[in-house]
Image 1 (spheres, rainbow, N blue to C red):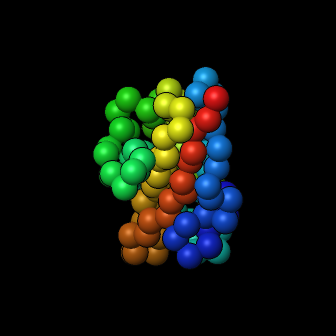
Image 2: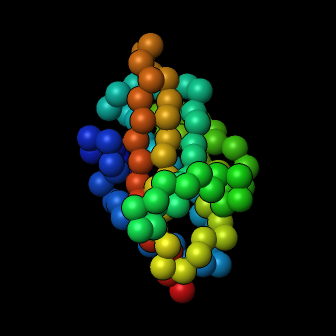
Length: 104
């Protein structure tokens, strides 16, 4: 996914309830990321509930200027989520995100 301001250009993304998908965040225009932290929040109806421990499988990794997220899994139909990625680049801590909408 390409970074445009803080929200990625492809956002919102649709994901099916049975899918398990690893996304990637592209930091190329800013530099090489280190220390990635990826979290997932349920933002349905204006909420902001951390569901990282139950909806992400694995750990983030880095390939060149991309952060590969853990697999996003077990989403609930009609719920909205925010997938957030924080990294260090050139002494700065930066964050980007995308919204995911779950559907059947």
